[in-house]
Image (cartoon, rainbow over the protein chains, first blue to last red):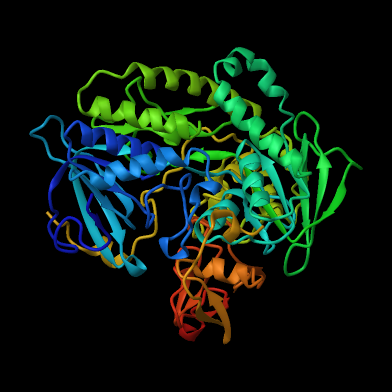
Length: 477
Length: 102
């Protein structure tokens, strides 16, 4: 597998190189499985990924220069990754375009004789270079990003996202502090807490907003997914053994400190996630890892008009058929982009998508895994769906939009005094969601504070920052 | 136990980067954000409006909170940049383009 960081498909910024049979965007579990399967069917594949190494966020691992002899100690299912990586490395049919950020996809024409798809990507230091990748079909395997719900003090240094704490640990072998509270909602919290503790951090508490009673409603689904139960139980048992307390039905309602976090207040929540008055308890810490689940990262497909579905937790995902086809001809999706469900599901869907692209019948094993794991994913999303009254811990001074420093007071004034009824109007009135991150951090929160649910997917015509010079360049062909 | 023990890491010799003029060690393969965290530094930017301190939040290049001035260029995401020997990182005040103000 040739890996290129500079000049993968022809002269930089110039005419595109080969036309691939399949371009896979994202080299996490879904993308790796799809590229591997497609290549085994003889398809020529471009594996386009923003990261410098294969693996995505899930299989993120230390740079080779750090000399890690046992990188798998920070992972679940590491052997699956190393097998895929070895097979891809040996395949002459897969080009790995590392460090490539796709900012827009142009749909191809119908049929084999039609115009190919075009993926526009920046790469190189300072995103200074541009590449256009051409392909007959595209698989979107761009994964998910974390959902964040604001609370007083969440912009203090030392308050980091749960996934971010894990990412920096996995890639650079560094912790944000020594005594780290892990809080929010969702199964990622247990995995993050396990990683942090095994790497030597003290975790005084894992604070989970959901009661976990939601899982009890899905006993048949749980019975069909013993591996997921075992995974959760293993994390839970490991944490208990190390004296980590899991506080269910509770939330961090404030982070304290002046120039960095020094403590948090944890309060009990009622079933609607409203903090119970008088239940607050202070826990000293030097870092807080926070996250409220994951939401699919689908902007490239949304801009192409692909159909979406809204999950039980309000997150918008791509709508796909049993063979991972989106509603846009030639565009497939797999893994978290179709609804957050974990690595096993993503691997299975990557394999299924590659079969469909190659015109092969769906393999029974992966189809069965997909059915079971999708049912589990729906149960999980419902169990951890943010309760409607979490806004009860958002004081008027709480910054909602981190980039533009917009406090909840302004968002509430836009709704109550100026009549804004949705996130878009609030954004126009307050700038919440208009900053560098384009609403990725505050989007779900602004939507809720605006009185609307999520529902409609965010539109981001450019899915990542692009130097103006590249937009001004003439099309390469 | 620390992260290096956990994965049996034997990194090459540390390089040195300068943070606001002070030498900070960085191991080969670490990002600038990670090297600063390892040194106990959590903030390297002040916000444009309130002048409040910020550092890395999402850790994967999406939130843009970890911006700083690197080798004279403002608005660089430290969570994405590998630390190179001799890099100079400067705390970024606001938008980082004070030199352009009239």
